[in-house]
Structure formats: C-alpha cells, structure tokens
Image (cartoon, rainbow, N blue to C red; front, side, top):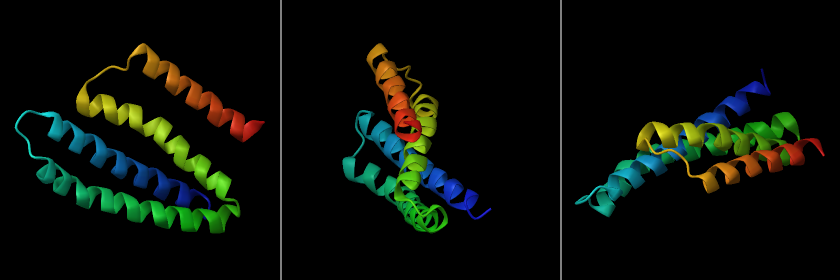
Length: 115
C-alpha cells in the first residue's frame, strides 16, 4: 500500500492539473471570454493538482527510493489521462502528427523503463 498511495496521488494531481489547463484554454478560446477570468477559474483546480503532485512526489521518493520511478509514474499519468481529458472536454480528435508524437512518447517511456 505504501507504494500504491503515491502512484494514486500523482495520478490525481496530474488529472487536476490537466483539467485546469484544458478547461481554461477552452474557456478562453471561446469568443468574448476574458483571459483573467478564465485563469482565475482554473487557479483553484491547478492549486489542488500542484498540492497533490508535491505530496505524491514526496511520498513516492520515500517509498521507491528513486526519483526516476516517481518521474515515470508522473509521465505515464500524463500519457494516460491527457488524451482522454482532451477528447472529453474539447471533442477534438488528434491529428496524424499528434498521434505519432503520442506513440513515440509512449515508446520513449517504455525504453526508459526497460532498456
């Protein structure tokens, strides 16, 4: 359980941060919406994400004794959650180049873990 908790906390932190980023970007992209208002709406959400990420990194380094494992958990959380959140909020499908970039990112992550 001591290793699972930081993984869950990091994943949730990344999800909150990505939600704040994507929702504020979508809000501002709509015509007539104010930048500052969108930023201030996203600020509490990203603050929760940042708090979770700091806690997750602290607990993760203590549990795993290796920052690279903690970083891999963070990057994997982004690789899993961001495409889902992007599509769910914006309803945009990725372009061919975006898909290639995502696949290469996944291969890079796997290479870092296993080679």
